[in-house]
Image (tube, rainbow, N blue to C red; front, side, top):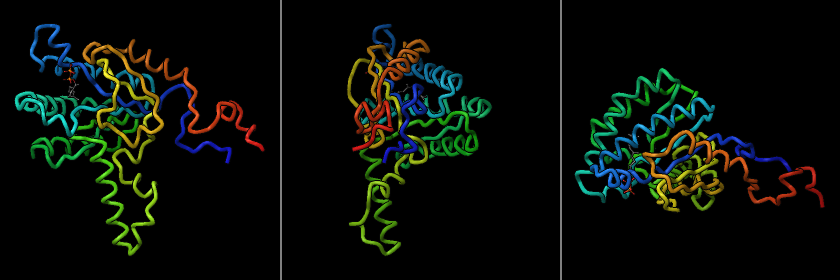
Length: 254
Ligand code: FPP
């Protein structure tokens, strides 16, 4: 088979960028401000990145806003972060809508406060038909949670259809994952100097290009985004093939 699979992007522009927005706390500490000031500044950078992606015609942006592990933070910080999500949903949903952005939240929302769940539902409904940019915000999200919930749904469907769960394949699981309806991320950016995935989209990142920067999230800007995209454009994505095959698919003989 010499044809690329449809969702293998070997182009120079990522169609889907995922970001681990790290460094808000350290940014605030360096400015002698409370941690929440870093998160507030981080939320402004979120707004700027959404705008940039719209300008650059990048159709999918996924941001890690709150992990399943972030509940371990001090209760006050968790509360302030949840309030920031509320504020963002209240203030930004209409603006996102008028800019053609579809907003959706991925993660286990059952653990979120009922009023927050309602705000999420309303914003998702309002923006559901927009196609310029899909902004997926991961809130109470964990990659292990995602795979577990997808596997559970796949098994349940099998049982309902009277099929043997031993026959399940990758595709049967993948179709129930968060983000199953959009291409997998081409580029993962992590700010803040750490080089790990931290239980983000662990299934969906299988062939993603990684870009790590020491820049703290509140200092991340359009220039930095440009650097990450430039780095992505230099890379040869092989998806298991040899470099020769990628350069010349016709050499796939013998
Ligand atoms: C990591 O920095 C950041 C978070 C856990 C929260 C991310 C939230 C935002 C960017 C702001 C809100 C976003 C929206 C969409 C409203 P950290 O606190 O771990 O920083 P540190 O490693 O320097 O302590």
